[in-house]
Amino acid sequence: MAAPSSSSKRHSILPPISQAGPKPPIQFSSSIIIADSALLTGAHTITIRSESVVHPRARLESTAGRINIGRRCIVHERTHIGLVPSSASKSSSSSRVGTSRGSTLGALAEGGGGGGEVAPPSPNPTPIGAVTLGDYVTVEVAAVIEGGDTLIGDGTIVGVGSRIGAGAVIGKHCTLTPHTTVAPGERIPDFTVIYSNGARRLDKRGVVELRNKGQARQIEILRRMIPSNPAKFQ
Image (cartoon, rainbow, N blue to C red; front, side):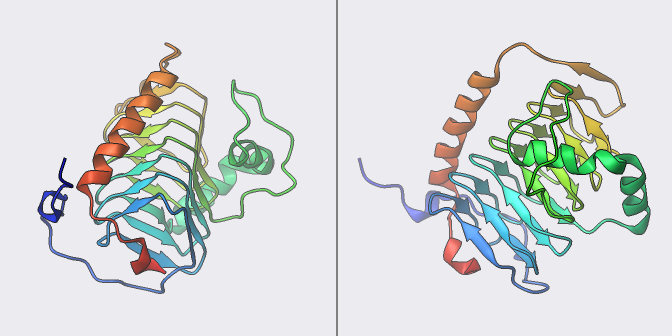
């Protein structure tokens, strides 16, 4: 079978965007897919691990700290990861998280924690200002994740137009429906579904493996559709 032509690749229909701000240090797996119209700025390292996808016009901003994106994540168009929060958000985040922040960050950054328990402090906690996405995370179109020790657990879906405040800790396999807001510093247990009207419930149907397989299939399709140019960001 003949290889697909370049014309079959997916291009954004929106006008191109220009680089604004410093070009950050990067650590990319050789298997990632990143559109050349993605925008990466900041002074701290941006790490993207194996088989993750960054769509056209996604913005990764490491001004407030490092950005760490796990395996097989999908970051959709017009998302903004690492937005520098306002002074009000910073204040709210500090007051909500308090002294337990380091232990919670260590748990999620190392892939541990869950079931509402807080793990012991990590010897190498996530640096202040960072945004960390676990494995198999999906950040849908126009969602915003503020920088400031913000953590998104494995398998979580951040819905279209949602906003996660600085210092929030989202557990594993959560679902934020479109246009949901998570307050700065808030801690969300594993398997929580949050609706835009604030309602919440737990969903422990045991579909994690099925969702991960679906994510892997979607990434293979996107690999054929999105022109990838990691070298641009070197």
